[in-house]
Amino acid sequence: MTGSSLLTQISAIALRSTLRTARQPAVLVSAILFPMMFFSVNAYGLDAATSIPGFPADSYLDFAFAFPLVQASLFGSITAGADLARDIESGFFDRLSLTPMRPVALLAGMLAGVVALGLVQGVVFLAIGLLMGVEVSSGFLGMVVLVLLTVLVALGFGGVGAILALRTGSVEAVESAFPLFFVVIFLSSINLPRDLIEAGWFRFIATINPVSYLVEGLRSLVITGWDPQALLLGFGCAVGIIVLSLAGAGASLRTRVAR
Amino acid sequence: MGGERGADRPEGDGLVGDLNGRAGIEAEGLVRQFKRGPRAVDGIDLRVEPGEVYGFLGPNGAGKSTTVLMLTTLLPPTAGTARVAGYDIVKQGPQVRASIGAALQEAALDQFLTGRDHLRLQAALHGLGRQERRKRGDELLERVGLSEAADRRVRGYSGGMKRRLDLALALVHRPRILFLDEPTTGLDPQSRSALWAEVSRLARDEGVTVFLTTQYLEEADVLADRVGIIDHGRIVAEDTPENLKAEIGRPSVEATPAKEGQRDAVAKVLRRFGKEIPAQPGAVSVRLDQGAGDLADVVRALDSEGLKVSNLRLDEPSLDDVFLEKTGRSLEGAGDEEVGEAQA
Image (cartoon, rainbow over all chains, first blue to last red; front, side):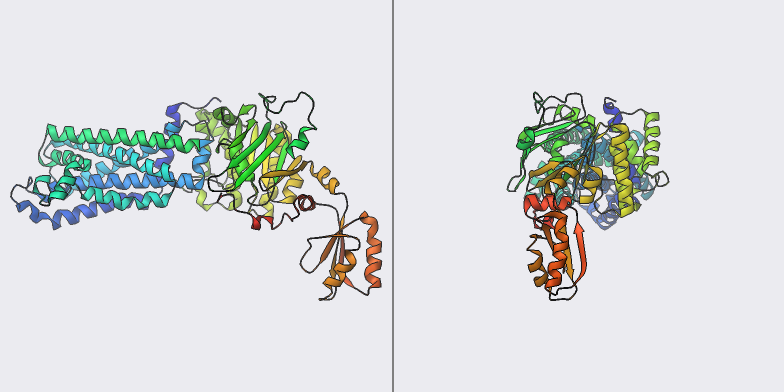
C-alpha cells in the first residue's frame, strides 16, 4: 500500500465534490435559477438599450446572454471555495492531509467539481437560452466553443475561490467575497458595450477589467459570429486567470499544508 | 518528568532513532508555541512502545490535542524532535502519515456523504484497489457496527455512530499506530464501552500501538497500559495506572454530615487524620496519613464529638488523586480554568 496514483486521487476527490453538489438540490437550483432570473430581468428590462445608436445587437436577449454564464461561474467558484473552507473548518481537510494524497490532487479534484458544474450550467443555460429565443450567430460549433469558454471561466474563478478558502480557512470570509466579485462583474462591459459607456472612469475600469474580455468573447459568439480578436482576448484572459489563480491556489495550498 | 524517565531507560537505548521500522513513538523536548498565544506544549519527552496503549490524560487546554497534531504531522513543532514509527515527524511527514491512523477530536465527516462513501474515499486515497476498497470497507463497517447505516448520509448519524465511523476511517490502511484524540467525549455509556472494546481488541489482537488522549480518568484506567498525565503543556506524571495510584499509596475517607451545618465540625475532626482533598458537595474528604487503619479512629473521633454522618466511605487512590497530588488541583473541573486548546 504505497499510495494511489495521482489520477485515482483526483478522481476520488472529484467524485466526492460532485456527490456533495448533487446531494444538495438547493445549491444546484440556485446555481441555475438565479443567473437565469437575472438574465430574464435584464434582457426584458433593458431591451430599450438596443435603440442606442451603435448598439451591436438587435436583441438585448442575445447581447445579455453572456451574463448568466459569467455569473454562474462566479456562483460555482464561491460554492466550491466555501466547500473547501468548510473542509478546513471541520477538520475534513486534516483527515485528507493524513492520507498519502498529494496536495495537488485536492486542488485538482475540487476544480474538477467546479468544471463539472460549469459544464452543466453552460449546457443548461444554452438550452434555456435557445428556448427563450437566443440566436447564436456562430452556429452549433459556436455553441460548443461558448460552453468551453464558460468552463474555462468557471475554472479560473474556481481557482480564485480556492485561494480565498486556503488563505482564510473561513466559510464566512469566502462568502463575504461574493459581493466584491459581483461588483467586478458589473464594472465590466456586461451591460453595455465599452464604447457606449459614457462615464469616463467607468469605461476606463471596464477596459482594464479582464471580465470585460471574457464577456465580450462569449458575447461575440452569440451576436457577431466568429470574431477572432474577441475570441483571442476572451480565451487569453480566461487562460491568464486560470494560470494566475492556480499558481496562487497552489502556493496557498503549500502554505496551508505546511502549517 | 521526561528527564526522570530518561534515567529508567536501558543503557544505549537512545531516544531518537532506535525505533526505526517499529511501531513506536518517541518525543524529546517537544514544544509548540503559538503566535500571540500560550506555550501549549512545553517540552514533552515521551516514549510509547510498539503495541502499547498509551493514555494521555489531562484537562481541557492541557496540551493533549496540540501534541497529537504535532505527532501526526499536522502541526510543526516550535522546538524538539519526535519520531513516529521510526520516522521524523518534520523531515519524513509522508512516511509518518502512511504508518498512522488518526481519529482527531472532532469527527471530521462530510454530512452529505454516506458512511460507505467515506470509506471508499479514504481507501482510494490510501491506494487500495477497487475490489480491496469494497472488501475493506464492508469489513470495517461490520466491525464498528455500521453495516446497516452504511448507505445513510452521515448527517443522520448519532455522535456514537460518527465516532465509530471515524475509527473505521482511521483503520482503512491497517496502520501500525493509531492516534485517538478524546474518542469518547460526548458519547453515551454504551457507545463508550463499544469503542473501548474495539480499541482493546486492536491492541491485543492486532498489535496496534494506540496513543489515546482523554480527560476521563476511567478511560485511561481501563484502556491504557501506561498513562502520561499532562498539565499546562508538561507531563507531570507517567507510569502504569497501578503504579501511579500506588505512588499515592494511602486511601482517603469521605464523610457526609447527617445534619446540615456540621460540615466544618466534621472537617475539623477529619483533618486530624490527614490532608483535606476535594470531596462531593456537602461532604468532607481527607487522605489518611496512616492508611486504612485510621478508619476506626475516625469513627471513634466523630462519635466522641457527637457528630453523626449519613455516609462514610473509604476510597482507594484514583488517577484523579494522582493528578491532585502532582498539580494541586482535581482533574475534574481543572479544564474550566484552562485556556481552550482550540483558541490557542
